[in-house]
Image (cartoon, rainbow, N blue to C red; front, top):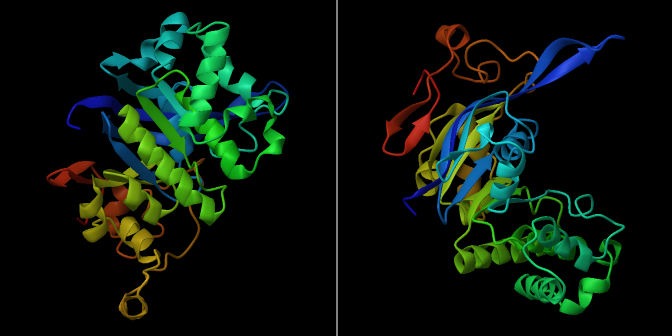
Length: 323
């Protein structure tokens, strides 16, 4: 897992705010504000942070579902930002996405068989009987009965729908999949089944995942490396065990202090870090360090200068003046 598959450099995505009769631009939403990381072949890279910090936007921008405002995305050495039309469409076969909401991401007017056949038809990789055989194979891979191909999405539970979403992502045999909070809409009892399925598929097909999630316990279980995002920026990135045992950024420390520990004695002794105030608006983020308005350790320099993204230990990156 040393060979880099995806390299993101200074990724920026701003959404314009339009107002008035003539729809003039009066501002921008700083959804992603300069993100840099890489994902290796066969690796699960975890991306965590609270709601609205830009995780899902980053995932969609990497796949060029949103075109970036600035920055570069290199997939297997090819800059996706410079590709358009047919060139980008051909490369799309190698990267896919599992969406967050299994109820909204499947077309209710199409049967499961049609949903799984659509990417095969669009990319012209199979015809006739081959399509039917591939659809049955995909349903078997995600542990659903091939007989379900004639049914419609409303006939399935949330967990089954998400498996159909996973099967659709696998249809074109990709190398890289963005998992956009794939279990957050599911019951806890079903979440473990979907996580186990994703892990089995990864070992079977040597997939690389960008795993976006809120649940820090799940991210620790499935990821090899983890990055923490706050208001459009990465604040810390490290190997999984290093990040969870030695968090350096105050925001990471606050997040990890909220993770329940299944030991009442340890839970009673540990210190919770309660962040005060609300997350600032991405329309007008704070000067300097974006986290300074809620940081219990903030100093004068935090308001004056944006912290540098630097490697403070081997493979441990952090953006904080005080580390």
